[in-house]
Amino acid sequence: MALTDEDLVQIQRIVQHTTQAACKCGLSESSQAEMGHLIGRFRDMGDGNLNKGIEEASEAIKAWIKIRRRGEKIGGAVACFIAVSIAGGVGTLLWIGIRFALKMLSVDAGVKQ
Image 1: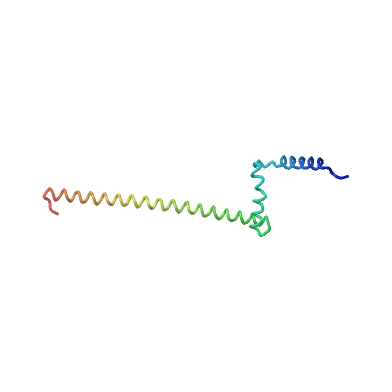
Image 2 (image 1 turned 180 degrees about the vertical axis):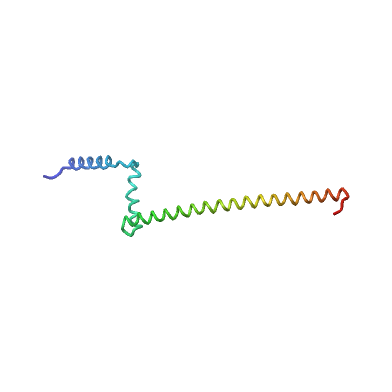
């Protein structure tokens, strides 16, 4: 017994409804549609081996996290160095200015050094 066009349409509706209702992952339909692309990218990274690709991606993410953390530490050290340098420069300029002012006051008062 051959299937009629009506039977094929009904089967297609049942399959679509079942597959759409079967996903309990909480992703939107557009995100679900991209899952095949994501899996394909992982498979490509692993030279055809999905598990190997996922492991390589995991290692790459771990390396990136380490680089970011080091960058944050280095950035903090550089910012601290700049702040201390500015404070030291301002302090030095103030000290030079105060010494110069005192010297000028001493000369004005007739006191020679």
